[in-house]
Length: 116
Image (cartoon, rainbow, N blue to C red):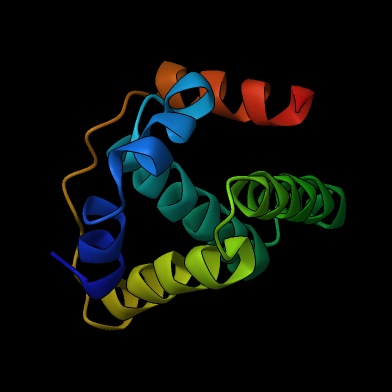
């Protein structure tokens, strides 16, 4: 477990339940933000068609996640940055984590975040 995963796991129950409606829990929240960071990085590196537009959308979603976590009384930008740091740590060490989330689950979370 990384430091931010430990921090999220140690949150009081009344904070953890706030993640459930959109993310399904703090573990799924961590995974979703990790995947957002990965998508932003891969899009920036590979520069597919219309990548600028894609990056704008990804960054808008990340910002909405930060604001949502802020509304929980937590430091959204710091938490998201810590999770992104975990992604980059894995990336530079050629580590591929076992992602416990389907594409459909991830898309569902992104859709819920977009509606917030």
